[in-house]
Length: 130
Image (spheres, helix red, strand yellow):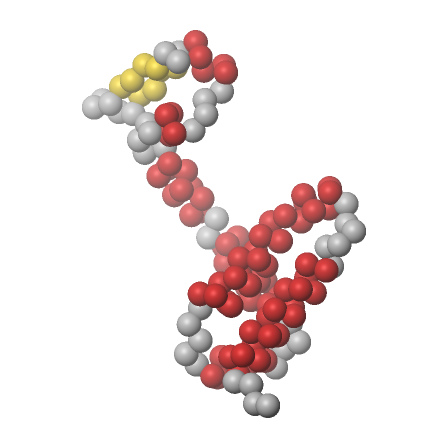
């Protein structure tokens, strides 16, 4: 029975992901906690490649099928990209704090109950008494 190249790649990626998950069986909670970022990256890449990515180039698939574990290759590259673009976290921070909606949408620490003064610039000054 002939399987398309894309089908072969999906099978390989699924096998790689199952092997990855199996490698985590029996490890300590501390190890899992410390390894959580890598687990998240591998899972994110696996889900993207198998459910979202539009495979429109058989050449890409053929190159990945040469590898025993193409999932690791792409996860490693994605991890490098995320490290190289960590400044995007700064953008997320600035975006999150750009308005005061976070004060009502997210829990406030108990220490803030005495009232906090927040100055978002001349146009927006608020004093919160919670």
